[in-house]
Length: 75
Image (cartoon, rainbow, N blue to C red; front, side, top):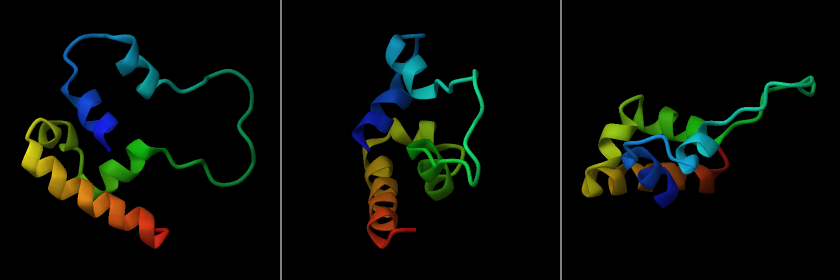
C-alpha cells in the first residue's frame, strides 16, 4: 500500500513509475481470466482519483484500510 502511495506522488518519469505501469506486450496471454493487479484493487476500492487521494496521508490511510480488509476477505 505504501508503494502505491509513493508511486502516486511521483511527478517525473522515474523508472519506479514506469515499472509499476509496465505491461508485457509480446507473446500470447494464457487462457482464462486476466490476472488482477494491485492497481486494479486500488481503483476498485478508491476510484480513479486514487492518485490524488494518495497525496493526502489521512485520506490514503482510510482508503488503504478498505483495500486491506478486501484482501483479507479474499475478494
